[in-house]
Amino acid sequence: MQATRLTLICHARTVAQKQARFGLDESLDAEWLARSAQVAQRYRNVRQLLCGPELRTRQTAALFGDEPLVDPALVDCDLGRWRGLSIDELLKAEPQAVQTWLDDAEAAPHGGESVAQLCRRVADWLTDLENRPGHLLAVTHPFVIRAALVNVLGCPAATFNRIDIEPLSTLELRFNGVWRLRTQGPGQE
Figure (cartoon, rainbow, N blue to C red):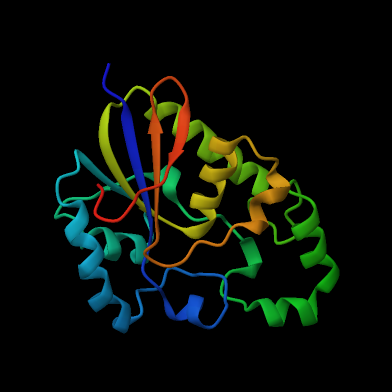
C-alpha cells in the first residue's frame, strides 16, 4: 500500500500578519508574491493541490498549480469578534479574555472556535486523508498547521501556542499506518 504524503504549506504573508493582527479575508502582501515563486517550483508534481477558502490561501495555492481544490477543513480558525484586531489592542481591551484563551484550549471568549475545536476538526481531516495515497499539497494557515502538529505528535492542546509557523514554511507528514513528522535535508523532496 502506498503511503499518504501530506505537505502543509503556510500561505504567504499578509498585511495583517505584518501588523500582528488576526486575519480577515485579505490578500497577500505584494512583496511576498515574488518570494513565493521560489517555493512553488519545489512542488509542481503533486497528486492533488488543496487550499483553504480564504483569498490568501487561494492566492498562494495558485503559485503551485492551476486548479487548487478548496477544502473547507482547511479554513482558518474562527476567531469571532477578534478578527482583524491586533494582539496589542486585545491585550489592552480584554487582557483577561486573552489570558483565558491562551490558558484554556476549550475557551473561546471571542465567540468563535476554540483551539480544542480546531484541533478536533483538523484531526478529523487527517483521518479522512489516511485512505488517500500519494502526495497531497495543502496550503493553509498557521493555526491549522499548529493543530496538525499537535495531533500528529499526540501533544496536549496546551502546546498549541508554543509552535510558530512562518509564512511559506512547509511541514511534511507521512501516513503509513500512523502519522509521522518527516524532516527534510538539503535537496530532498
